[in-house]
Picture 1: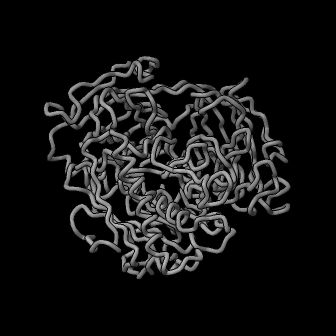
Picture 2: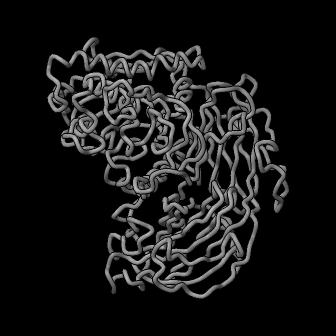
Picture 3: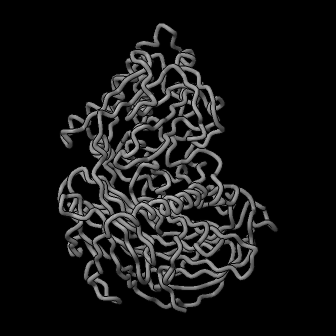
Length: 624
């Protein structure tokens, strides 16, 4: 049986395929909804790409990614109509012959393309045609699996990656001691493989009947969930494609939707027997083909790229050869309507350049022809961007955040008593929040020296008339609750806007979860003791959450909240870091930290790879 590490000639998008990382496995989002997602219907709950959730592990990533694909398709159709009247793009053909690898497989030997860019004589549109030729391997048939193989310590060693390149076997989800005929907690089949950094694992499920709705999970040796796939482009059978970031042992689990193990080391830790039935599985590891193309950018250029055809992943590397945005998905539906960036392909990427020189667009995970659209724009130059902080409550249509419609939100002062503060403390708290937002979104940006034209004005409802509705004014409402808004989150922004092409956005920072009684991690009261300077701590924490939401509509995605690098754009789930609680675990004391925008790896649960500079993206997005 031949095994190719990507769907040969696939024209549709690959299934969900998230990236490897380190971190706390128990807190990683699984991406599984409890109801099968419908790409035509917006999923329930806030969009996790835009929201600072109290518990991101409960986010429906699969549902939201499927829905965003639909939005990206619609957006691509609209953009295609606009492009039809624009100048023809530069057309480039890949020079590496078909069936060959090694000619343009790294940034160092990327094929250079001239005539593309944002300079006066350059064309800002580019189309690249090429072909991927991955290694082909033969799968060896092995005996059907036997129970109990429902956990990492019980996993069947397939030899894949060590003594075998590919194997095929069969099994049944439901025939183990924890299936519906046993304890009923859920049956899982685990397989061990050996990973080599840079090589790619493919796990392809085929079901002979319609009984099993499969899900494939991938764990590292520490039991951390690093990747998953629910459905392939062709249907409910799973297809996971994963490029290893490090050498080591890895464990593939085949399960029935939506039951997954709470502890991958315990075969009886499932949430209940769900979909069950027989399956065939092919596990293969081999060398992928990757093609790189070099394009020149200037500081402040906003690059967007989309790939169609066989390729399932597209990446951007900076002049230092560092990956700055890798993507195997299309979530361009999250951009504002005014953004000109392309979308609608198998995978969509973007980058805000902070230095001049050759940048590199790479494609991989495919077999056959691909078609890349690359476009470059200057960050929108405009009169001064204004950010308005509204502490007075507001009446707002929360449908823009996925909420139920027009709602009235209580002012911040309604929550003071829940932190043990009084009305006399309101001005000091507002001062603290404003100071933190100013430090993060103005002072640090100016001090970076990256963009001499960076300019933002920060106003507030206590000291200024409400300017929202005027040109180039975005606002953040700091107040209200989940019940009032109908949006179950701490914070949420309207868009993610690389380049800040939309300049009149809204965001919420709700205060009910932040002011709950001590005990839950998201509550600020959990970190307040008699030793705390309450006003200083609450001001800093709410200011950081506010800056986080502004970071989204100025162009930033979430970064990894579980690594050693604190960042304003850390996703929810590790709140002491975002709230700047120091080593003593108490907020408002001398050891509290300063959390800033800066470089960090993308949040692995959201399907991007590489290093995001959350500071420079805003510096060049907010240009006067």
